[in-house]
Image (cartoon, rainbow, N blue to C red; front, side):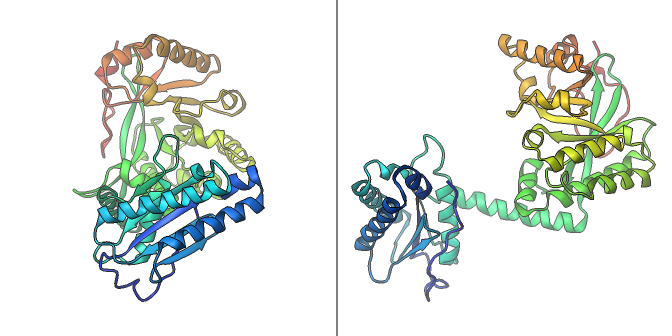
Length: 406
């Protein structure tokens, strides 16, 4: 079930709510009802719910239908959040009971999110918050009614702050690469570095915050391109044949200009494409299209090395290991952190053996303890990456890493 953006009937109170108005967005799983009971029953159910809600509302309250599956209810004179929650529960129960009178059990297909206008907020803003609360009701085991809480507001304010920081950073070129070493586990030689995006500034958000923000804003492509350009410029001064790994986003990969742009950027910095590793998450490969497949073949033909990033994070498929020109397999840090659990060790060893048999080198990510490094080395994992071996830094260190040595 998908949710369209909620709308409300905005009247003179939209700019003068002063915290006295509450908005509820109620969702009816119309597609499920049509599939089970037919369109006629779905229409009847919708009309019955609307009439039930109208009977509870006053003349000054608004009920708006959005896209056939969403109802937006906007109520005046809501004194506080507790009152808003009580009214929201009553509206939900009325809608669910009305649905059950038309089709027993249909009330279980109803979800509702609510939000009360805070000082300075318009009804439209509260409507967006209510829709956000509605989305949070989806998923097994979640309650069917949810209010946009003070914690949600703090979280959203933080998101907005981070989004503004990301816009400014991409616009001003303030996204820079930090380099984390990739180390040969047998001996500790630094084989290369992964370029990881960072935003400059003392109060800059972490990657866990700004990467999702860039994705929400549609800026992950420009951000990745900025990091790649700066990483190539830095790698131009490195010892010959030191590998540089960059992450390729699912936005960049299908771009028909991507291969030529990347090849030209490498040429400008006098880098061999064979020393450049392009890390592609396995989720992108699993959901690949014909366009993605052609791009991967084109990148391979241009000489770039291809790595599957976050392998084992939930989308594992053996298909692309044998069918596509993969040079490196990066084991997700979650797998590394299960080392020592007997059943997990068996699975991990088998994955490493399979990659080695296919001629694919393995990198263990997220190595934090000597025991993890020792186990991976013993199982045939050639390379390692993680805080034990080196943290991301603006200036890479090329010296041998003692933490990897046997």
